[in-house]
Length: 109
Length: 110
Image (tube, rainbow over all chains, first blue to last red; front, side, top):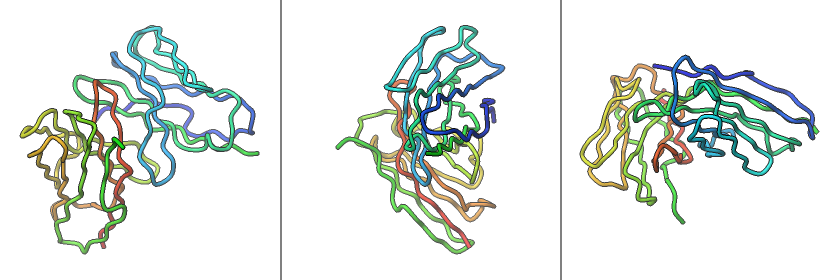
């Protein structure tokens, strides 16, 4: 099945730093979604993007729908310990979502 | 409280046994999905259903079966034909393309 290329694979940062991650595809998507998963739990939806070029914020999180419709970016500002987890992007393909491989974020105090 | 419930959280079975994982939602969503997640991996789609009494195979349907008799419920059966059933199983339902996930069931088969 298809998968999105998500990078970086993992990040180790200090509390207070900003974080950037991205997702790229060879296919065009009409919707991009970003999720966060804590260990042993289901992913939680953070941000949904529906329009090319769209920039949407949710608290310290900001995500953008790339203008080519083949990529998306997620930024986290002023990271805190509870930001630890795995972040997944997902793109809508026909009636399904295609998920990225995830970015594992570790935040050190 | 609206949401998706999966039970049980942990499930242990012997090889050769079929096992059914429960998924219930009270969000009034039409579409429901089952995913499998292996350690350090992303989510792979097993089956999905857009409407009651209809469902489609995802990318890794072999060894699994589903039913959708009620809008609220989408149980997944892991059959003895599934070669590597030990995994974390996630159920989701969706409004538009926004999928909302349950807490997951960790299945261990020995």
